[in-house]
Length: 209
Image (cartoon, rainbow, N blue to C red; front, side, top):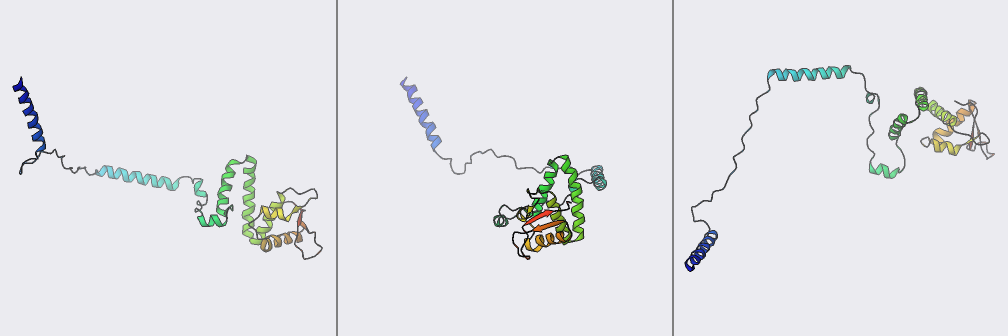
């Protein structure tokens, strides 16, 4: 029994001694190496495959040329994003291009009556633009006044009109256009001041658009 115990102790000591001793010089440890990557050989496409792909591309190109125009083809391009600096300077303001995008979206959402009316308004605005800036300003004011409710006395304040059309310069476009409309008998202007040269304060629409 003691002999077996001595053998076991020697065997255990021998195993530990061998595991701690590094390999002798000139002896290499076997390491499993993966095989080097091999180049994948792909057969070149056949002439028939190339011809079929070319004919498919030609058919798509011809079909795209003669297809019916999409709705997006008839719309102006998307506006460029506004810079952070421009947004800070004009906080809350809406650019002309962004207003147009909002208008197109709202046209898809409003009732059918407004969608039909938008066609006539767009044609009218286009005709005004072709007549020049003065005619466009007069037509814009005439249309805006026609769509605003007057007060109990039948007047619309100039302040309300300016809020409705903030893009028009008061002295450069709005007042001159109102004076031309007054000379044409379309509106009547009044002011609380008795000075003949005072600025108008109230507008009475005499001939709706």
